[in-house]
Each structure stands twice: as structure tokens, then as C-alpha cells.
Image (cartoon, rainbow, N blue to C red; front, side):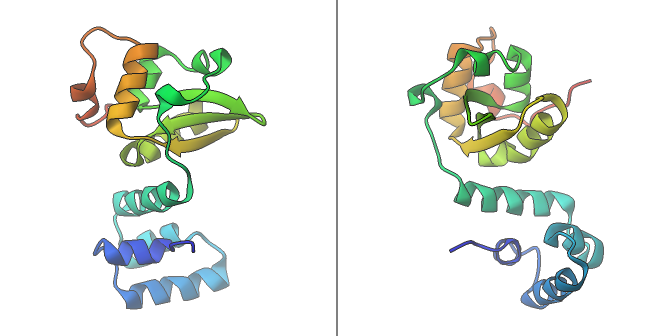
Length: 159
């Protein structure tokens, strides 16, 4: 059963059931995305909507250990070492024209923005743990001084 974004926002304490019902009614008539309407009409912080969306997406996709997946060289060269660490993404392989990318639930929003703006092919995201992501990045995109501690810090924007 698919978990609705509104249910997640209620569970997170960001919205009330009444607000969700109001937004769902608006969505039926306008056809606009639930998250956009929640932000505009209920004043929900966009970061709350993004976190709830990431939780929803993480529940729908599979989780992987990037080190045990079949890797493809063309996928690994699709992004640079800096991009992999900065945007917390690990490209795995191309499946039916889509680049499969591992990231964490916490980093999904940032990873999606990166993929949309930088990668020239469709992408599909799978989830992994922070530790597994760090292991894969350290092995395939080594940067002296970067490790799990770096991934625990807030990600920084590219200047």
C-alpha cells in the first residue's frame, strides 16, 4: 500500500488531518502537486515537504549495498569525484537507459536536484545507508581526508 505524502506530514507533526483533507480537495480541482499546495495554502516549510517526499520515495524504492551491486564503468565515469562526494551520489549502472544512482534518504532531495540539473540522462534512485555510501565513495572516488565524518556534516553547495 502506498503511503500518502499527507499521511507522512501528519506523522511528522507538520500538518493536521484537517489540513491534509483541505489540500486533497484543492488538489482534486487544480491537479497541482500536494506538496506545492501544502506549502502555498498551509504554510508548510518546503524542507518539511522535501523530507516527507524523500521518506515516501525511500519506502517505494529498493535499498542496496553499492559494493555488492554490479557496477558499470560508464556509470562510474558519468560523474566526477567531487560531484559524488558533494552531492552524495554513487552511480551504479545503466538499466534500460536510466542511470541507477545510490544515495541516502536524507540526501535524496539534493541528489535529485543534482541529477536533474547536471546529468544528461534519466536517473533512477535507490537507497543505501550512510556507511555503505561512504564505503563505495571511498573505494571508487577516493579523496584524501574525506570519509564517513564528512558525510555526517551538512552538504555544501557548489560555488
